[in-house]
Image (cartoon, rainbow, N blue to C red; front, side, top):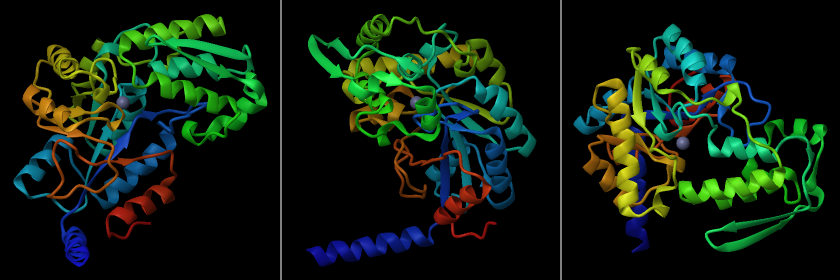
Length: 345
Ligand SMILES: [Zn+2]
């Protein structure tokens, strides 16, 4: 039994090695940030370097065309599709001009409930509240879905300017216990699976506790409907849906999931006056039922966060992607080399 499955695995690996491969890259932001606990931002300089490598050594393709090639079983080797999640305004003002310079297409997944809102994404708002230099009260109590939770901040109550500067490259989920970043991450974990309404209620409790009203920072703005419309005019840009509230879909009822997918599709179709066929699961979180709903709603493909190459056996409603970080050209090329067997500098 073991031998058979091992042999199968070897054949699978060999077929994968021989097959035509494509890669879907996952970006979020092109920007320079003081803190980036989720490693979402690639600097404009590094992004231009990535595009130079893509332009020189690969076959850039739109996600729509790649999904079609996948369906037809004729993926061109070394195809690359770029995707951007969430709908930050820097996608329009920083990423688009560079994509145009290198003539490379990209798909932008928009969270429609944040369009034109006077607020930041909830994780950015939380960062604004908890990761500014200063002192916080030593104890936090939160009521979440009728349960009570308490945090003793101890050493994390004080966050100096030096701590803040040191956290420049700190990833939230790698933070050391007892640090302010670890405290931020533990609150983030509690908020992530909540429904929008409950999350807002908890955010209000945090705002009262910090005694600071969050502002909308220009650098953290989300695209407005007008900007999405303008953005969608570019022949290199595809707009895809990313739900309304950026919810953790598996924690929602089927009906709620349907509404999140359908409404975000409808919102964008109303703005762009054309069918929206690409979808992306927030946090890469979905169930088998979610992908069935995505099909029923009328999407042609959906992106996940599974890290893998794309080849003919990949599931079109769980497309794998490679998460791209703020790597310099050498590092980016080395990563691509790992996935494609091509020579790059
Ligand atoms: Zn997202």
